[in-house]
Image (cartoon, rainbow, N blue to C red; front, side, top):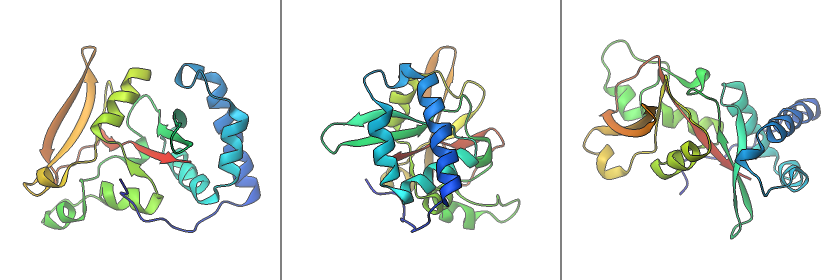
Length: 191
C-alpha cells in the first residue's frame, strides 16, 4: 500500500553517518524489538537507500525514534517504525488530511497528517501495524496517534486513531478535521 510520494532527497555524508550511529545504538539497546536480526545486514540496506535514509532522518528529527521492528522475508525489506514512547512530539496538532484541513474555517493547524507523511516519504501506520508495535512496546499511554484510515470511512468524514490505556490498546474514530496537542502520528519506512 503506497501512501506517499517519494522525493529524491539525500543526506550529506556527515548526516548519514550520524543517523547510522543513532540507529545502531538504538538497535543494540532494544534487542527485544528484533531478536533474530543482524545490524550489519540492515546497515548494508540503509547505505544502499539514500532516500529511505532521508525519511528515517525526518522520523528522527520529529521525535519518532525509529527502530527496525520487522523483517519481511518475502520482499527482504526491513521495516522501521516510530518507537518513541509517546506520539512523536514534532508531529502533533495535525488534522488527518488536506480535505479536513481545508474544511476548517478557524483555528487551522499548520498541516495535515497525510501531507506531512508524504513530504517525509513515510507511510502512516495501519491498525494492524499499530497492534504489532504495541505487542513489542507499550506506547501512547499519555498520547494518541492517527492511523491510516480506509477510504470508505474517510468518505463519511471519520478517521482512526489509537492509544493504550488501562493495559489495553484502543482504536477509536474522530472527525478527520479535529486535532489535539496530544495526538500525532506514527510512521514506517520499508528499507
